Amino acid sequence: MYLPPVPPTPPLADVMADRVVFLDGGMSNRLESQGHDLSDELWSARLLAEEPEAIVEAHFRYFMAGADVAISASYQATFEGFAKRGINHDRAAELIASSVELGRRAIRRARERGAVRPLWTAASVGPYGAMLADGSEYRGRYGLSVARLAEFHRPRLEVLAAARPDVLALETIPDTDEAEALLGVVRGLGTPAWLSYSVAGERTRAGQPLEEAFALAADVSEVIAVGVNCCVPQDVQGAVEIAARVTGKPVVVYPNSGETWDADSRSWTGSSSFAPEQVKGWAAAGARLVGGCCRVGTQGIVDIADCLDPLE
Image 1: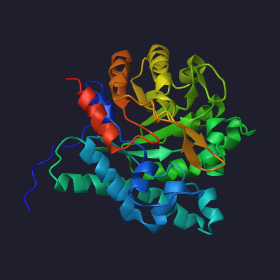
Image 2: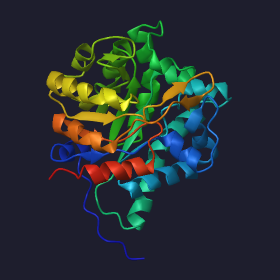
Image 3: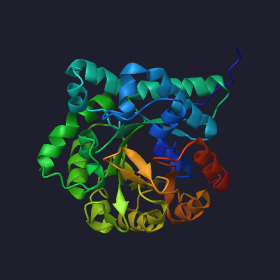
């Protein structure tokens, strides 16, 4: 089979300095559309062990829809979460690292289908509350110190960094204590990162002003973008403007569909308010990494790409 030559993949930070880069959409809803039941505490991370090929297919579908970056299925993958299922530390480390390789496999598959544009992998690092699987990632304030949160995150971050993703996605962070812990661990790992908060209005989910939250990352050289994810689309514009003003860094945005997560029933309620044309305002305000989170699927990424061609 003839494959067209592919130029070397440049660093993500270099490319997004010149144009908008498209992220993928929600991993869980993509897997559910492929027929997988994710109604347990491990969520999509369960498939790292049981059906990794399904994750490759999900990433591949997003690449074919126009995404440039695959965010790994490691959001809910933690040593503590796997231990509850009887998976020992060494095997858990293998599974966490494998999430990055599954993204690379999807890139290779996209190449086989003729994709020649740069494609990247982002290693998802979800908040402490994601491991608890009780909705507390939308509240924060776990009652843990910054040092204890750093102790929780460090082993997983070290494993993911060693797997050589293009960037670490510190995502859905609900409060500044957890952001401070993550930023402390990221320093010196040698892997670029973005930091994105889950927000309500112009505050973190825990209630801190976004000016204070974003300022924590302003002087961290490893952080190549700051922003928000898994928030309602209506909260994005103000957050982008604050992030750009406070940090001077490129902004990352990938909201959910606008529906609400019910932790008790483990389901989404309400209706979608995601309108792809909103991304034009986000890009004008400084967003350079743009995609969707929960309940935004492949068609949502197609629509974003249609509304917002990469800036030349």
